[in-house]
Image 1 (tube, rainbow, N blue to C red):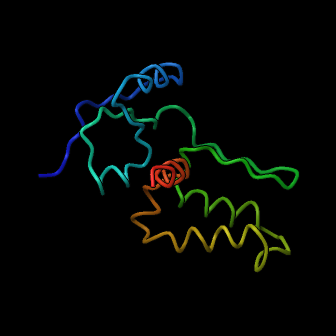
Image 2 (image 1 turned 135 degrees about the vertical axis):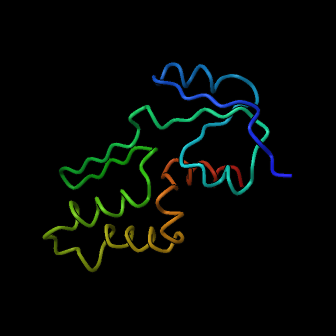
Image 3 (image 1 turned 180 degrees about the vertical axis):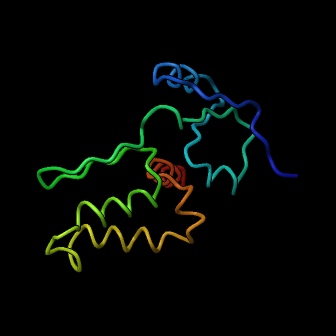
Amino acid sequence: MPKKPSSYHRPRSLEEALGQLSKPDTKPLAGGTMLLANGTNSAVVDLQDLGLDQLEYGSGSLTVGAMTRLTDLRRFITDVVLSGSLESTKGPGSLLVDGIHRAGPNTYRNAATVGGIVASRLED
């Protein structure tokens, strides 16, 4: 039988989310790819409404919000960072685009978030 969260919370502010996440046996919910794969009996705090999916590029620096989906990051890099750039075939931007493509099928990349992937690797 798949494990189900004990409760679900969808805070509207970062302060509310941090308060809920400070409670024992509570996990953040980003894109949900790991949660769907492994299941959980913990309470979950859905981070979708907190505006943590921002992408910015300027002065050669890329800022990526934790809730940014892989698909959106790939599109942003291709359309904004590499647009008209000599780096379009080599360099960090094109390597990141290639890495995102190799992460899994479109269905995975449409749900998986940057923060969720990093957090899931910390649990290993």
